[in-house]
View 1 (tube, protein in one colour):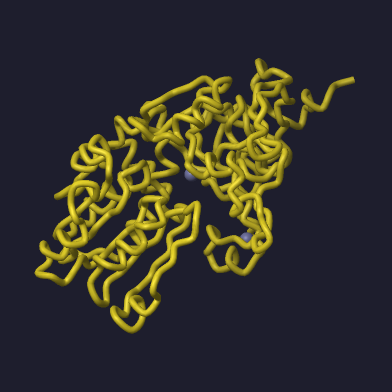
View 2 (cartoon, helix red, strand yellow):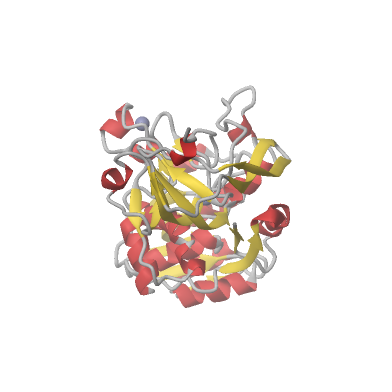
Amino acid sequence: MTSVLESPRTMRTPELPATMKAVVCYNPGDYRLEEVPVPVPGPDEVLTKVEACGICMGDVKTFHGAPSFWGDATQPRYVKPPMIPGHEFIGRVVAAGPGGEAHHKVAIGDRVISEQIVPCWACRFCNHGEYWMCEKHDLYGFQNNVNGAMAAYMIYPKEAIVHQVPDGVPIEEAILIEPLACSLHAADRGNVGPDDVVVVAGAGTLGLGIIGGLRRQNPKTLIVLDTRAERLDLATRLGADLTLNPLETDVVAEVKRLTDGYGCDVYIDATGYAPSVNQGLAMVRKLGTYVELSVFNEESTVDWSIIGDRKELDIHGSHLGPYTYPRAIDYVATRKIDVRGLVTHQFPLEQFADALQVMERGEHSLKVILIP
Ligand SMILES: [Zn+2]
Ligand SMILES: [Zn+2]
């Protein structure tokens, strides 16, 4: 009798093991390294060997039980434990279920990435091409039907959006494709033109990607705010014209001084720090554009009359990286956006708890990755 793992309907490379190491999330703070079965790809699915998994601040917030993920009196629960976290990854196809290779236009051995959202393709948003706002909104690593990349192997299901990644891209750069795709979407949401003075608040991984994306749109002046000197150095390398440290400079006054008192045309918030909202509303000019990308730990209280009565602002949200993966892959692979140096720490999967801590502290660290 053949086991399901050796099903002749599943093509796989011969050396695949039956079990693998994975980080399994049960509850906030309760993440365990376990030996679990290597998943078997079903129809139109592929199995990939994970090369690396980046840690996102969203993973840190999930670990600590943030209500936006775990739910509370006013928000439904988003996560479905027990699940394997990890939505920033690169892998290689090692097996395919029936039709899996043709469906995803990949072959065994291909280096691949899947967009972090797995759309349902049935809701009104998916039906209008707005798949990143899918009502079901399954995202790798947050629900157990779309387990993530903190494991040796993972499935890209039928609904996944899969892209090829060139073989030669070093993993420390390829792993930044997912966050860069999000950054490019945020930069696009600024509708930046050549006469614009743009302020990017926050030069973490996402902010730095936004700077790289904006540089290619060539605004008049690109100003970057961060409280950490080493991040401002990277911002300059990625194309900032001017960097300011809010701990040393009254940044609202300085941006107004640089714009004849009017304020910046576009403010893009990638800080994850709630007071940045009022800072942005104060420094953006009348009829300007404010882009919000942050996921905050707490609410931000603002005077909405600034948005309406006083400035008539355009407020643009930004979520995930829709339609931007091909560009992100090209920019990383060609170094049109040079992301070298953004991965500051690598840990083996076994040290996931240390990795989460280093990511959370953020001192002399930007992107922390796990190698399974
Ligand atoms: Zn992320
Ligand atoms: Zn949908």
